[in-house]
Image 1: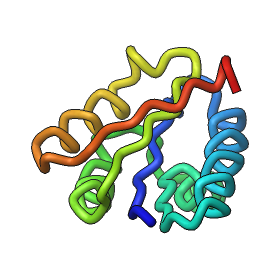
Image 2 (image 1 turned 30 degrees about the vertical axis):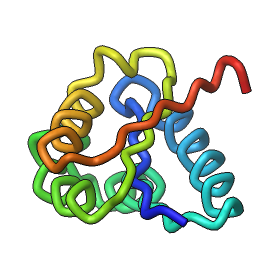
Image 3 (image 1 turned 180 degrees about the horizontal axis):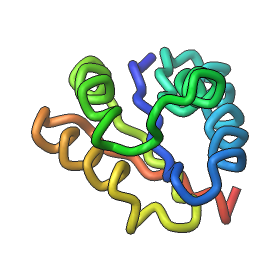
Amino acid sequence: MNKIYLAIPYKDDQEKSFELANKYAAKLMKEGNIVYSPISHNHPIAKQEGLPRGWDFWEKFDRVYVEWCDVLCVIMKDGWENSNGVKAEIELAKEYSKEIKYIDIENK
């Protein structure tokens, strides 16, 4: 069992990212992991209450959870390599010496 932070690009296709995050969070949970999926948790709140969608707003929240996790899992959705948020989450994971795993959704 690992504590997992689940990263996915969000800005360009928010609803698709939300659906994929939920799908892979559930898969990881079924495997016995404890999963924090910021998009699964925060997307409905941000959408309903008009919160900002960018890294500038969410960094302070995500930093806490990346520090908490054992593993950062990155969903390799189109654009993940260029996502400011995902790149920042990867850098935080490195800063905190966390294991980083990549989920290739094209071959699943």
